[in-house]
Image (cartoon, rainbow, N blue to C red; front, side):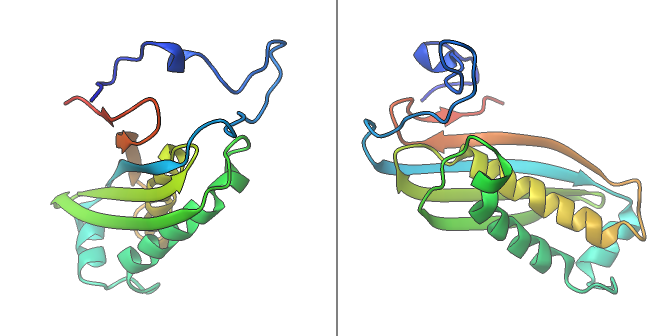
Length: 167
């Protein structure tokens, strides 16, 4: 297990060739392994907005159900959004929401696949789009919402091993 301090050969930028031009990393020599990643984000809002979401009182419907679907769908579109991401055979996506207090919503996604490269970008995209969807559905009642702390929490698989964000 590693911590958040980068070191070793994986710390070099692999998306540039020897001339500094962008490239998609060649993964054909890597073995296919089970890879998964977990990412999170937080959405800070007015307590009254949080209450409307929890009580399903917004005119647009069940905000968290729609945001959950948006996060899942976003995973499938990650290689179209992030230019040098490989399209991956995603086998599982989970998006969950937890209220940390009466104004702070925690968003977490876990993405899994069997592939030659990891799914960190897919997990990060899932939480970002889920949070943006909550914002979009609630902006009419609360334009002060803030999306914060979009981050990789944990990932496993591949030659770089297991990463867990340190507290």
